[in-house]
Amino acid sequence: MTNAGAMLDTYPKQRDGFDRDLLAECIEACFACAQTCTACADACLAEDMVAELRACIRLNLDCADICDSTGRVLSRQTDYNSTISRTVLEACRAACRACGDECTEHAEMHEHCRICAEACRRCEQACDALLSSMG
Amino acid sequence: MTNAGAMLDTYPKQRDGFDRDLLAECIEACFACAQTCTACADACLAEDMVAELRACIRLNLDCADICDSTGRVLSRQTDYNSTISRTVLEACRAACRACGDECTEHAEMHEHCRICAEACRRCEQACDALLSSMG
Amino acid sequence: MTNAGAMLDTYPKQRDGFDRDLLAECIEACFACAQTCTACADACLAEDMVAELRACIRLNLDCADICDSTGRVLSRQTDYNSTISRTVLEACRAACRACGDECTEHAEMHEHCRICAEACRRCEQACDALLSSMG
Amino acid sequence: MTNAGAMLDTYPKQRDGFDRDLLAECIEACFACAQTCTACADACLAEDMVAELRACIRLNLDCADICDSTGRVLSRQTDYNSTISRTVLEACRAACRACGDECTEHAEMHEHCRICAEACRRCEQACDALLSSMG
Image (cartoon, rainbow over all chains, first blue to last red):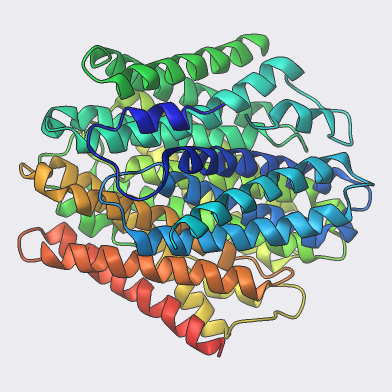
């Protein structure tokens, strides 16, 4: 949906750091997960059983914020910094894993949690793939 | 790319406010534009002629921030507030118009500005469609 | 707490647009309100009566996002754009007013809402002062 | 400037995790650093020598985004998650260290970089203090 890959191809200098396709997929997954987690937090808030979804809402909000900043950092190619990239990817992977685990527990009862768990898994795996590629 | 439409369909209560398809398109366009503007600011920063792209970079950064918050606000359905929705859409339309106009001026020289101008136009039009639907 | 005013004084070119002191106060108020609303949403989520605080939580989240982007836009002086500034300030004023009104209704029962209502009022007034100065 | 400490005191349930004063200081430092880095990126963009400040601008933008999401995550007390807290603090510390180091190199020439280096150091130390307290 975003132009992540196309924009990487227009970068005017040589890019350092990540493989182009793995990076484009991770940027896409971060922005998609940020949107899905924002919507899932709001849908959980509207459920009759909201009091039982507090942990899910809090994790949705954290995951949305961390995916957002990670997607922005990864969208920048100028003066690549491997330490910032690694640590922000580790934070994003941790947030997506925790939120995905929580949403999975409600996936059968709440369709928004099922979709959100998938978005979190996609982003967790994309972050993991980039981290693995760093060696 | 995001699950904006699918997530709208899982909202557990009746939604107030916007037409489902127009809303899903606008949420998608906001997140896509936020990513594209973030990447365009970075690509402009890497150009040899960066000093001539200051206005473009500043507008890219504003547009990314405003699209980000607009996409988040629109992703929430609980207790719809028409005043907040209208004013944030007006701000997003204004930012996308200004950034799209600026990027269009460099579209022939810089492919990242050409793609960014398209993302800004799509988001400007999606915001305008939602605003028009408010009557 | 932030260095908003001091940073305005270090801007290397002549600034266009807003009065220095009104602008510094508004930037400060935006960042403070973003933090307070984020914390108020979380405190509301932890209340036994969370189901009755749905509107408050949703407005807290919107207000935090809009204050965040407004504070960022106002922190930039390069190529001042009055249309973007005006519309983003109008969105921020609307969000702060709606969130402040909602939090005020719970101010006697919830101290976090009382403090949040004050942060929203401060930011609403700071946005209004900048808008009034635009004539 | 923010109400970080006062809001922590109003949290309706028992808080897990961090020492109240260290946490309040870190939340404050994150929001202050996000504002200062946003303004420093813009001031660098306006300098005649902008082409030599590309690394500084990119680090300012990354640091602003990461401090922003870290300040938001730390502002939430509901269902404290030590893994998310640790990894996001490590990312924030890394970004503040890299940005502070870069700004320090221009501190004598650019007052905005001198102030920004101080904001980055404060935030780096606040993140480090929280991480140390996790044992």
